[in-house]
Length: 399
Image (cartoon, rainbow, N blue to C red; front, side):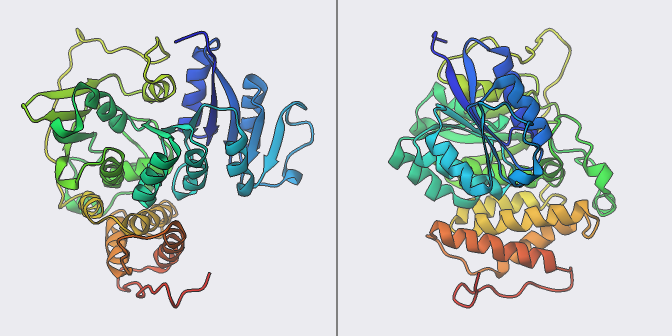
């Protein structure tokens, strides 16, 4: 990198993506600096981060000023409270790169503000493209914002695509670890507990994403994200199960060449590349030892045992409002599973029924997507296996 110090905004600084991003910044003190940190309620941790990195601004979106001691943050740091402050802080930030590490649809507002401001965005919040893929990519084209994926799979594809032109791509191949239950029978899956699902064999992630990996809904959302991020139809997107998680994804070109990106499973590498792109620098991630004995196994996913993945392909093909509904229904379904009011195999069943019940619109505006997000969440909260959701009508709903 040059002598220029790249300033960074970290949205969701206390989560797994946020803390990994700060590890990257910590490893490059002469090349990177933090301009903005955001968190929801964990003010104690973000206060520690602030003392170390001294951002210009901190935004706490889930608590008010009275919840935080007056001396918790250095006096020279501007501390703001509430979700409405986040978009304004991003707009006025000096950050060149915004890392969007807020999990779920809650991350859409911050990402949208960064796109409107024309920032370079390290996109770790896959729900942004799942919920509003066409709107987001159209807005990025309009403002000149750059979307650089931070998901390890999409980062791998982003890197592999640099070996050819878009029109030379035959297909992209997302790899999936298969989660902790890839060898379990349907009967065993119906007995999965919360503790079972939170034990992932490869990655250390937040609770919601860990459950999504176990149901393979995470891969379903990644299929939808890839459809918008790379501008490819769903028939050019495949998924293979790769338990070792060394090959992070692949691109097959029309001449039969397959270009893959390999590295040990460590989120710091794709985060760092999103910050330094198009340059590469020595980093904080471990290197792959090719002389170490290991195997690379690939197998097709089982769509009968993991029907969530089928939903991802359907939504990627259909587009419109379907992504917002699937995402919202799944977020609530996972919350209900973690609170033990829903079984593991009920998660994709709930999502399927609510997706089928909504009034599809092929060209929604952002307000309609947010309204459908609210509707789907309410239906998911009320859903029981024997009770189909009420038909949704935009005309009859009042917020």
